[in-house]
Length: 244
Ligand SMILES: [Zn+2]
Image (cartoon, rainbow, N blue to C red):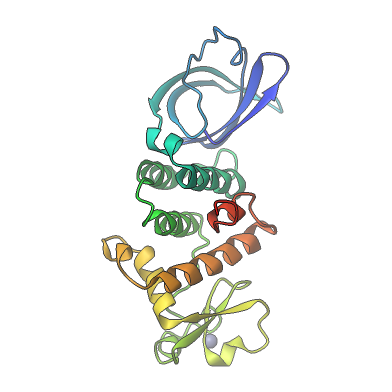
């Protein structure tokens, strides 16, 4: 359940990111009544089993039943985790298309929302989710070969600083970086942290420094802003601007 909008007197339109259908907008009639057919199965950021009535043409699909499966209770008592969860929902809403299923992305979102309680790892978990999402959507930045000429050795032999083209989506060798717009500079250790965060295993928990983590956050934010053409609403909360 990634978004809810009140409509009419007693109904809501829900945006769901479903395992089998991808993103779906559906009208839940009567869901705001005290005795609604959905009871408490329709919390934002919860996983539900649903019954969906597909409509033809421009009509909204109807949500006729919802049964709560997982509520991610720990998010409800932890503000930074809640903000991060809302950011995950925002990305699912804004970067996926209706009826374009991505079961792996569904699983990645559930695992991320389930494991947000450790404040030390929260920022890394969000980065891991973003990388998993970019990979699943075919938007994964190139981290080990020049995104322009394809040379792997030119990146491996680069000095401590590696250019990262935000517009082209990946690292750039010395020859290719000239003339590219929107280029950020990454240190080798930040680039390595990105590599760990994008791979299975446990290295992502310890690899790199706090500075690398902050730099990785900045670059990922720039990548996401570039893809969306604007800044996500929840970014200010991720960067701690509103948490203090
Ligand atoms: Zn190149």
